[in-house]
Image (cartoon, rainbow, N blue to C red):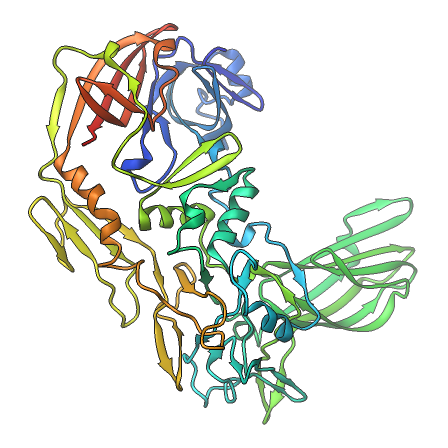
Length: 578
């Protein structure tokens, strides 16, 4: 199979292009899947100008700088991106990034993952059953969390108990409805391993490896809250559908389609005047589910509905014949509010539905996996249809004989000046320890220099504090882009109290990293370059342990420079494993 880049409407032959492919090992980086090419040049011919775009003309605009497609190299097919960097005459300089197919949903927000939505008869009684269980028997839970950011003199918070998932005398506290009183927020929190399982399954893989039995992570739920219920209490959306705004005209029937985004979870009201005249019908749906249908096209509408999805959609469809009206609908979409002592305030509604998409932080799936990698030095390897998340261990078992590619005098680089700094996200009035490590010392909370390799974990475990006599989880970072973890292992002392066993912060996690950092500091790099046939090293994997020069070597970076259709000039950077 020839080396090439194939897009939807063109194929770029790379067999005679002098291109350099680079791959870096994730063992030595704080990210995954690092494959790219150095900039390379090719000539734009007539066929390419027609298919890829006429980059050689100064008069052509709106050319795409990037082209998605598939990169074929060494007989393997990788999803990739061809980026056009610059053009001079017919000479084009470009670059290819590839390897993205390994986890195609790394850029998906957690809220976009396909979590199952569960309808329940009563959220309070459902939570009372679930809170007695733990993972993997249940995928989410309801630990109690201190939520005292609002004072009792704030509108809407006067009788709030200042706990999320507040449970008293063996029952979850219920919000009153006539009149509405905000007492409790029912907030299901997904278990971390459930989110990982759903995320990898969404990419077509089954999760396996050490992570599944990691006692530090196994009973941790993810905490994140966004006050949707109060943030949009006064917002209105005016909706107007005019006769000139039809989308299509088929069989003497005009079709109108109006979609209105609903950005917040809550109870809503749609009201307004429907005045169409003529024959036809109207259909109103929310997130694909019909909430109103009628063949009566002249009416005052007042429709109440629930939206339990961030990024929901209200859709109004009208089919009409022979109407002379100008405005068919003139109305308003508004979050339902109530009046308390003459003032508008919000309602907290605890829906009888579990929708975990509402209860995850505003981060991507890739960011979540990367935080765990950096937290406990996890690697990620794809074998068949499984994703293995195993701890990186500074020892090896199977070796690949690389002695045929030795040269006489490789370059050895000593790492005794290496230093590392491990830290966590900065919290609100709750400092977390950091650690500095070099050849001479291990020092807590020491400032670092520019040459230090920094590893920052944008996450934390919610500590346990006692508030109003209740010892449970306390929020220390009011930021939906930060990963917060709560340990919940079922009822504790008969109640839904969170815990926080030691092990995921410093100095405890130093025991996880100590051997790894020590090996990185005490070891040295071995670099050399050689020429070989392409087929000779096609089987080499970036995670392989090589045996050469009487040493066990981990590949840190490999660069393959194309000489011609048959040969590579290879530049190899390795690290001696002790």
